[in-house]
Length: 226
Ligand SMILES: Nc1nc2c(ncn2[C@@H]2O[C@H](COP(=O)(O)OP(=O)(O)OP(=O)(O)O)[C@@H](O)[C@H]2O)c(=O)[nH]1
Ligand SMILES: [Zn+2]
Image (tube, rainbow, N blue to C red; front, side, top):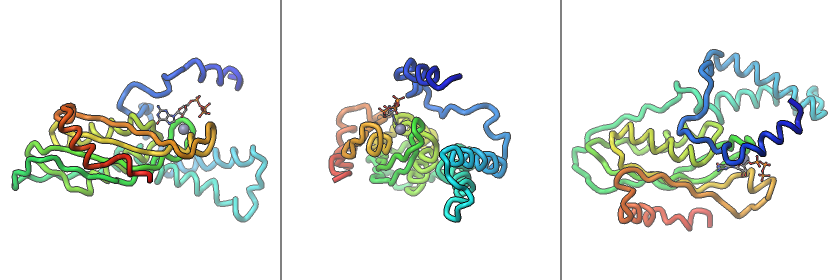
């Protein structure tokens, strides 16, 4: 398909590029290749991109780039595509009968915009109300990190984090707010360096405005990027 036709198709998509499912769209054969095989294949693709751009890959500084980028894609920034890397979120009994909301705030978030493959940088804030079990605090940071390490749209990332914690904690009463900068907006295109994007997902009790307010008061959103 020629480039002009492809660009027209993207235009015709409208907002469909945002995607409707909470699941990351994966092919059924996504894990037929091993990580090593994926790195070898992506290395060639990166080599081709740099070569096409006219760069001399024999240059000392550039010669390791294709391997470096391929490893970074497979093992680091897109490492959360592999279900083997899903964190084991051990829960334990809420013996102390703590009934209030627990908030894990200011969780550092690095993700990648799936439209431009540019960074998304921000903070995630999570809250839940225990239904008998408690999750280790760090596991919430790990869950954020796992889903962030995928090509993402912020809306889906927010929903995936909530869905995972609802499953782990066996309760609907989970909420997540993400406040993040998209480099595709800040550093290119419209180049608006000051704007950031806020997304939220409020499950169960957090649909109640008072409970939601309490959570939002804890995270004092407006101060995050000052
Ligand atoms: N809803 C949503 N949109 C996103 C996210 N990340 C990037 N985008 C947007 O995805 C859109 C892709 O639109 P296109 O018009 O195909 O891309 P483009 O021509 O590069 O658009 P500009 O960024 O406006 O130059 C852009 O408006 C991005 O800002 C996200 O997490 N959620
Ligand atoms: Zn983008």
